[in-house]
Amino acid sequence: MRMSGTKKICIVVTSLAKGGAERSSAMLSKMLSQLGHEMHLVSIVDAIVYEFEGQLLNLGASENPYPNFLSRVNKFLVFKKYLKKHRFDYVIDNRSRPAFIREIIVSRWLYNPKTTIYCVRSFHLETYFINPNFLARWIYKDAFKIVGVAKEIGLEIENTYNLQNVTSIYNPIESLPKPSQENPINGDYILFYGRLDDKVKNISLLLEAYRISQLPKNDIKLMILGDGKDLENIKEKVRQLDFNGMVEFQPFLESPFNYVKHSKFTVLTSRYEGFPRTLIESLALGTPVISVDCQSGPKEIITHEYNGLLVENHNPTALAHAMNRFVNDEHLYQTCKQNAKKSVEAFSMENIAKQWQELLN
Image (cartoon, rainbow, N blue to C red):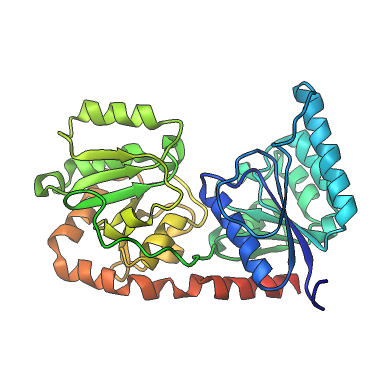
């Protein structure tokens, strides 16, 4: 039996594997469960890696004898039956939502708009809103709330779609496992970790900036940790640029924090973001960061020259200069390192959980 004042909540995700949005969704289930709410999760795809709290309906795991179209229809029917059975107080939708027909069906047939919360986890709004804009506004204007994971996202949604039911709640930092005292590789290195999708993460910019920086001459390696569709293309660029073994690759790790802790600093070079977990995780582990000033997130996390360096995007020279500063200016580097952990205390699970509790009440 649930305690008085608690809710029955369903979090809907594409999957629970290999991504910041997916990790954040799993963490949201933990936060809300710790507050006493009854949690359910529905995953569209059979990819479950991250730990979560609650009852799981894995729509991708069930055996389905139907061809593609009928298979999708069957998923809709199973999902609809599940929602009807449990009569949730709130549905929190964390999926990407660009498909026109599907989202009209989901928003107007599957869900009750008045009890639905839509999360937007990227500044690239086309991932979460259908075109044209007036239809997107029609779909979401009656939703209980639209939650952007950065203030810049919330403002962009309001301005683009003229919606009034928008708020912002940041992604939290979970209690990270204590890293080993042993450096996972020999020597100094800087680190990129995340999904290897060059159209989003722009690892090409990182490679160019590292190439023209002073880091290779100072025997400071570049470690790239992750998987993705552009892995082989990025490895080919490394071979073409002839880094002489100064760039190393490691596959995706569910817990990459030993590499993060022992890196000199981590780097983010994305064309766009939401509220990047890599930055807040790095800082929580005491590792300073260098990030391009993309939309959105970095400028809401990094205070320039206090806990990291914020540089102009798409500018390899500026990025290389920032790398050099962290190597050559020991006072600057140590200042950012000493301020790293306390700079992200506001993003603790306890603080972010309070904001979700206020929203649900």
